Image (cartoon, rainbow, N blue to C red):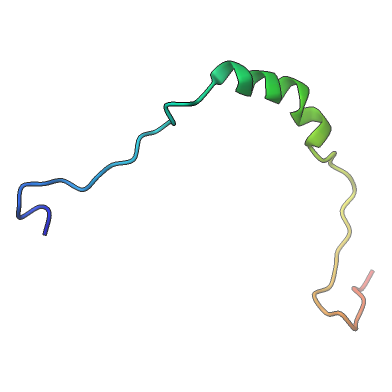
Length: 55
């Protein structure tokens, strides 16, 4: 319907106007390493609550 009236659908902007790249870079350097989970050995699980996974 918009096209027939000569309008185009709204397109979202890529980044917010309030974006603070410096604050983001600081957070990535200082906070993210403490939040990020370390990779470790993974074990197989079971979706069943009554039966354990085969090992």
